Image (cartoon, rainbow, N blue to C red; front, side):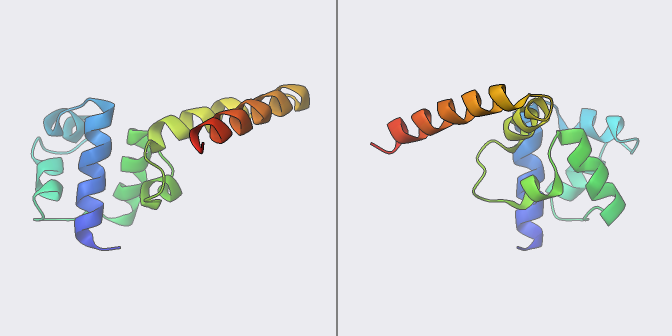
Length: 106
């Protein structure tokens, strides 16, 4: 992991969320060039700002750093929805996931 990964990942997730650097900067309570300064490599967010950026983007810090998760925003939304399911629904969902994974691997 390096600074370039952090900058690129913020840009990638920001684009997937469909917000401009300007809007994200303002939404985070900073000057209009805050996110642009991160993207360009002039600065990096503090730890507390990084956690707020993750929250804004809808990902956990783990999801942010996991290179194997292609769609961390969607995965987090799914995880949030799963938390409220009962055992029967979770079992049904697991069967569907197994079937989709099996089909994909063929």
